[in-house]
Image (cartoon, rainbow, N blue to C red; front, side):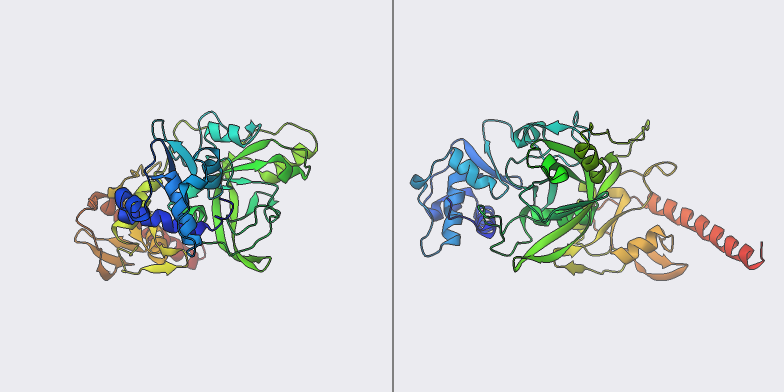
Length: 400
């Protein structure tokens, strides 16, 4: 198992399992099915030992799949899977649900004795990997003192992606890949979906004796890109604390260095709170294959296609728009900005208007179930905005 180090080999084995199906996958590689323990990979339960055996053969094609008789199905399999951010689960038990955002009864500032306590609380659902996530999205990250590239500055965190490191020396020995949890962080960036951040005290205090872990709260991924470490490509992300939903890392660091208790997060209390369903935005993007419904633009980035989910009737008071598929469009960033800026509107027959000039037709899939009453509301609201803006410009011209 120590010779299985390539995350892409695991990814290829998982992709093959999904493409062939369980029975064909096991038959092709001469593997026996698991009875109880499975690898949970992005919502799919895969026979754990066969997965590792086949991945080994992908990384070492000259040797072929590893015989499952050469490694145990217990702790050795668990450790091997965890280095790739995958947990071993029991089919007879409950598979931990993926939760984005807050965890009940774990406010920012909650301290954990170790990673196991944080795992059991649901804050960071892996006891080894720094990223708890899949290609479709990342739920949480953990900053460990083994990663000197990670940095804290004010309310910002600079975080280095997963993979490419030697387990013993910590040095980079391969390029990182835009896959699994690394890609999940990019998906969070696209959707504006928050990620939980757990940090080891020693990262903040620079004292090796500080061994507890502190939950800092929710952060958004504000940017991502490529850098180099030890001559290899690495993924670098910047995350910013969500106001009212997190602690400021630099303030926590100062409190810990002074030996003070960590202050609770500053939260504004409201009777009502808008809870966004990020799955709705994902659904509309899949429905249109990330192609803009207004201008038919389809952007493709290094991380794949990119589009934005735009609410038609805004959420919250006074608009009270629903966070449902009938109230959301798939738009490119330009059209989204123009739509929110009240330049683009849609008439009842689907004609797209840009400041009163027809520019095309809104493309609507049969299964979208779009509510045109929301579009009428947005058009009326935009007309009012435009009228006020025109009046303001006229008054300014008079010197009022």
